[in-house]
Length: 193
Length: 358
Image (cartoon, rainbow over all chains, first blue to last red; front, side):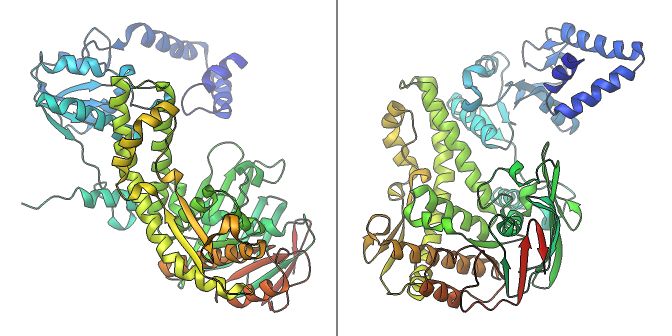
């Protein structure tokens, strides 16, 4: 039992107390329900790999987005993690392809450009006829640094490089916006046409 | 702003406690180790979400307790708000304003403002440059909360940059160089902004410190205060580029706001090495009084003054002079001995073994 608590405790966002709670919950569960969870974990580990082209999670050599012929391959949206694709997809605003870096530059965590899928991104540009790269990394120190690194790397290749805007949540009140976000929103203001 | 009411639960040696400080001076008396400073520390915690004694979060919980609560009713120009911090032994601390939890605890900063005088203040003058940089940065955050994020950004970029330099191990490969350039650009951007803010603050502090020094010191002297950042003339980007070879060789960041100094002088000589013990003490008091004034001006009303056992360290002249120089507003002082002459508290409370006796 302690083994299970320890294993669960290693999951992101799960502390020792939650791990204990989940373990006791699993103990109470009927055997088949617990097995369903175990099987799902095994299946996901066996079947799901990373897409060979964009490094999104995938059940085959290529992910669902890379095999979708309706997607525009001339635009690549670069994100840090596969879960960021889910977030962007939810907007239904984007019809291009993706590239997952699988992290952001952070020497503290031992991650440099070599540990990220940067070379793979460069390798895609020519064969896929990419005309625009959207830098969609997180708006924190490491995400911004990664975006700047990529921008400097890609600029000389004559491709249009864009960075997602940062600003105010829609439907919110200016009054409740934090100073930093509001400051950024002011910085990135646009002329009204 | 002033504090109307303070409630503690399982904070330090208090199981429960309640205090309604006077709008003027409140004196907290009691023997050593009974919990006088803990009351000031609790108020300070609401201001900065950290202990002014530098104690780690779990030290603030009463021993054996899983949760401590500090709650206060704060009056900001007639607008009353309830502020509450929940400290947890395990898991994240929580902050509530008017019973609504804040999404980020840091959003609380600026709601409660305090100026803390403590016997350790002498380190502001005698200690290393880091003490004085912290004074500048803390004052900047108290003046405008956005500086908290700026300070955090500079720290984070510096840690990343220095870690990268360590990984380089003295050799600058093309890969490392490309990444280093990115961190340099980030450091230049955030560092310039922090340097500008500190320099502007030092300029504002200089006349206030000089005036406060003459008020608290037995003998007036010419007091100087200047922010020294050698890179500011040429710009941080250029300075970093120049220092790169050296930085790579030594695996440290040799230039930037983390190496700057707030230079203090008395009578034209460096205060740290040349001033007498008495002059240093007067200068430390003057610095605190000056930050109190500047933060008060920025925020529109003076912070709450927390005087932690300062009078035990001061001679009769400086005690009386400090009391005379304290600006109007709410103040709480602690003392183990007798009240300093000239202190006329509106409220006097006695603290004994973690209880407040009126």
